[in-house]
Image (tube, rainbow, N blue to C red; front, side, top):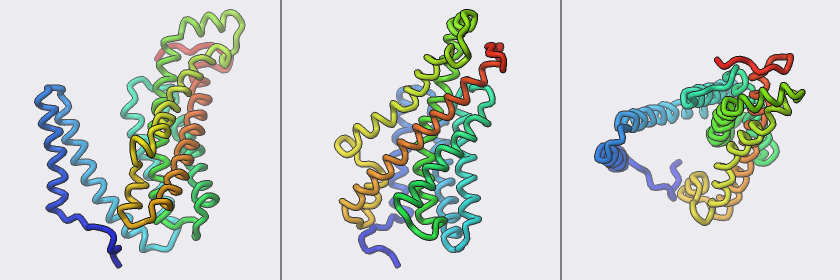
Amino acid sequence: MSNPHIIPLDVIQLVYAYGLILLSLALARLQQIGHEKQLLWASIRMLFQLVAVGYLLHLVFAVNSPFPVILMLLAMAGFSLQVAGSRIKKRIPNFYRVMGSSIFIGCGGVTFYFCLVVVGYTPWFDPRYLIPLAGMIVGNAMNGASLAAERLSAEMHERREEIETALCLGATSRQSADQAVRNAYSASLRPTINTMAATGIVALPGMMTGQILSGTEPIVAVRYQIAIMCAITGAVAITSFLIVQQGYRCFFTDAHQLKGEG
């Protein structure tokens, strides 16, 4: 049964909405920034991906089993890893192993903690809760994780002479890379901190807005938004921490020698 509070959008209304994408393309072309093809391709990809996910979720919701839910979560994590890898120009050594294990532990751990302890619904694999919540947590955490990996790689290359000097003076790999690790971790947290600082006054988050539009009481939507922001922050902090702690080790040999640039 449809919710009487929700105003449905038909195809014509979506066409009107897509007009804003066309306007964006026109402005990009007017400024000659060269992003027209990327913007058009991204919008088409977004369209087909969301439609496909919508039909897939309809099937998953109809199946009372954890297996399709887990498969979809793994697919989401794998896709996010692939997207992160394509965005980063200078990757850390063993990129996919470091990123994959960090996402699995950081995002996976926070997601199940949030779903089972904070929200506390049953059964634990209920796709109406688990999949959307996991998507928000993983999607937002990937931004911090990508920043952590990219900044760590940049710091290690920019500070190469400084690190080699510290090693020659008897420092361990951890001591010589300490500032690079700190800077990378700081960079990964900064967008999340800025988002939290602006949430509520400057911007109304998507989850809260969607719940209000669906007829949920504003105070209930606010509580959910506070909870999910806490979960996202925790996922970013844990995932990025694991990335920088594993990542810097990949630049050194077991004998605490800096590897050659590849």
